[in-house]
Length: 474
Image (cartoon, rainbow, N blue to C red; front, top):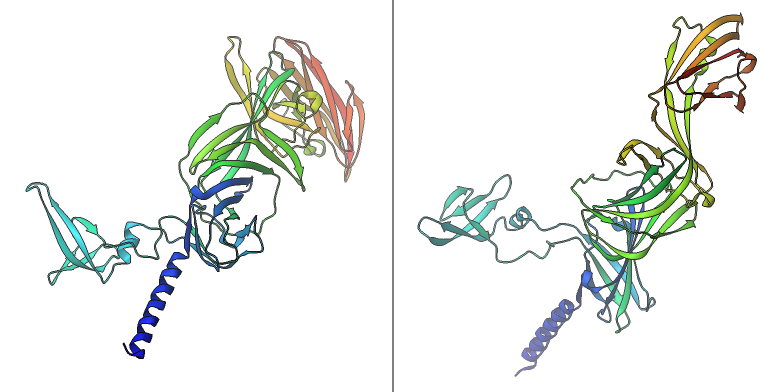
């Protein structure tokens, strides 16, 4: 064997070895390699995923295909590190493969190439395989078969293989360097959209509206395109500032899973200028699933029901021709979010829905209101609706303009109570400028610099007239 032939054989074997070695350095990781996953959900369509997997990687580097990530991942937020050998592993280049496989995309890759079509004849009970060249897959398929052009063709299209640049699910691909032959615990963290959470509350009033049982629920909605098995779940309550971008809105149906528990499941802690709620057990969050988890529970929390009539500033600078003006009597429920009241946990923003048992013991819905993020020891005030059996009428009994910006008026507010028990009604009058109450039939309190309040007790089936005269100067 001459030297030139020997050199050629050696070069061929070396090239073949290099190709085989390069192919062997491609490592694929799926959810089966997952050691743990942590999901932190913000109430602003944003989540932080920490996915830790144990992987044996080729020494001297190679390619790692990290699969089973969220389809709504923000690739620019990905961070990868080895927890056990951080100095031996580094990412040189990252690609996010999201050109997912579909029938149309597969056929697009075979335009200009030959494929097979399996034709089934049910009447003759036979099969026929036709060889065809795919000329176009744009708004319908065009085939060339035996020098004839077919605009579409019945049958099952058979492809020889799946093209390399099409994948079945979103994948992060890294070119990496590695100086360690032992397995790495790789922690991959990234932000993703389309996981949301919100708080909902159920408040059940007692018979005389003096206390209530309150339960809070977290509703978690996952449309991120990934499932998180046995995840550590954390929720962040607060308004996190984000740069505004446009994201495609994805809609879908979700299944509902109710998890009942008697003890608190979330541990609440202060975190920066927000609050973090840490679920004290693992949970699986499926893709396209709505999950509800109990957040808190309190019994016999002291509440106060208020019936209020609200005035407006323009009453005191205008002459009202329409008398006996009917006014709405608003119904409120308020309570202190304190430890002494059986609460004391910072309450995430959400909707509180109120219920009460009727005379037959059946629970009935009586109203709802939305609360903002509420720290501990702050008051929660809910507007529930309008009173049915309490009537308020307002009448202007005197009016005069003393000067260009000085007004004096006299008012009579009639309150009628048609309920079976005595009711206390509050009248809130917002004043402005330099004001002075000249006379009044009932005592009032000064709420702030520009607001006064009358609190009137009305026996059942009776009415009370509240009269007062006020001067305001702009």
